[in-house]
Image (cartoon, rainbow, N blue to C red):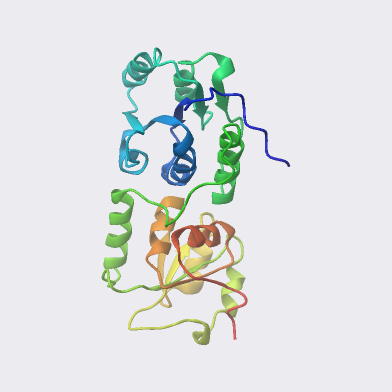
Length: 266
């Protein structure tokens, strides 16, 4: 599919409102796209208050409007924005709250997605690429790893500390794909870089019992259905062995070396 041609916008810097009420990983991945748009547009962002340190950390003149789950807060924010005369509104989710906020502009000025909730990081980027292409942005500006919330990072650190890892230790992690517990039969001691502790297994959602039965006593097991939590743990590993597409994509975004789980067998 060819990228869409940029929409007609004012010759000077357009005023753009970005509405991102998605989850933590979606917010983190949106930052790179906003960074790529910043040189050519004046941007204001509406996002959840719990992700202020992600989307709200962008330097001025970017302006962040945090909202809570309180409906009154939603409508208060809409009233504050409705007279700002935005040239474009980017509605990055199909949530009702996003659609309500998007009405600060007439329909012709809105750019919104009709795609359902993504399950892969690449799907999040695909949605963002379609939307930001309308303003001439072809790729995100990501010069470092994704920024996650302090809360998620602290939970990851506390989880690993519970297994005896400190901040200086980087455990070996495995992330098997759902329905492929047999892939671990190819996992041998020669394919794992051991230190004084057992490796960590990031359990997929759905088949936890099967994996636990096969690996109890051989590794530390952590259920990680939430992709932002999984990303935080992967960032703390020295290497990820995986045949799981979301985990492999997260490792690349978090700067962690990846080895294919099956190919690692000896």
